[in-house]
Amino acid sequence: MSTTALLGPTEIRELAARAGIRPTKQLGQNFVLDGGTVRKIVRQADVAAGDRVVEVGPGLGSLTLGLLEVGADVTAVEIDPVLAGLLPETVSQHVPGLTTSTEGDAVVLRDASGRARLTLVTADALTVTELPGEQPVAFVANLPYNVSVPVLLTFLERFGTIERGLVMVQAEVADRLAAPPGSRTYGIPSAKTAWYADARRTSTIGRSVFWPAPNVDSALVRFDRREPPATTASRTEVFAVVDAAFAQRRKMLRSALSSLAGSADAAVAALEAAGVDPQARGERVDIVGFAA
Image 1 (spheres, rainbow, N blue to C red):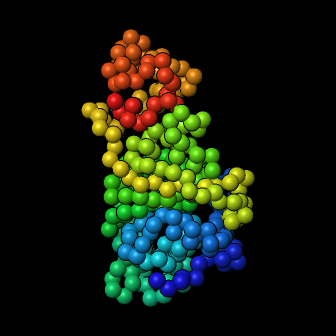
Image 2: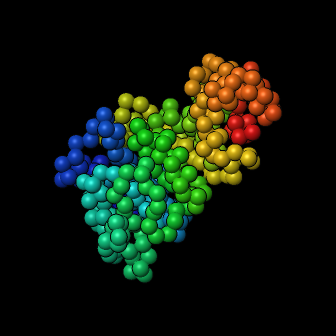
Image 3: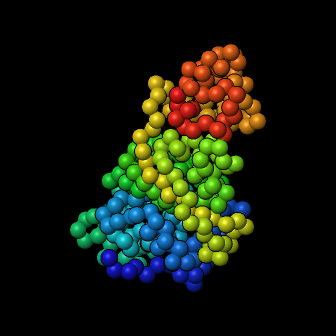
């Protein structure tokens, strides 16, 4: 695949100025300036030509162009109507030969063969229940820090075609997503992500590749979907147990789950039947234990 001209620092600032965007740390608007970082994300996500990828929060289009460069087709979900208005024009300038049309609620850019290279949906990612066109096999995104975990879990829940992905999140969040049971950072995000997928932190991303530079480091988390653990309970029921187990981290499970079970004795009986020590704390139990 031929190299696409990715967005550079000057063009990113010019695009932002033209749209009247002054990115702020408070709003989590941190645009990636560095093409090498964009290509690292695409590479570590194992995105290949012909893959349909869903991207949340494309912003000015840095990562979108990186995905298109390797021949992937992108469904982008952008909450900001100003940014969403800019993206089709930016992509058209960098990927020649595309035609733009409005199809339902989406803006679609197709190549000469009619293939939808970019499908743009202007919406809040947390409220999206269906995506137009071909369904995604991968989820790749530079996620806004304040909603990164809910967005990831929502897309894994709602779109079963997603087999793998890579997200850039705050380094501390990356540790939580990938943490194994027993570690200091293991908690609700770790257990719930593990219901859907194996997750691992792959790289740390420094602050200098962003504009404006954030106050924290970022990191990449790779995930690969697998079957959820075997259980007679629903996912909602299992997640309720997870939530209760971590509501008060210092409590033993027999106490933490007493309200959910109806009493401490009922919690002990349920835990023993599941093969889980009633005196253990939530951070010691893996998702298989919670499912049991």
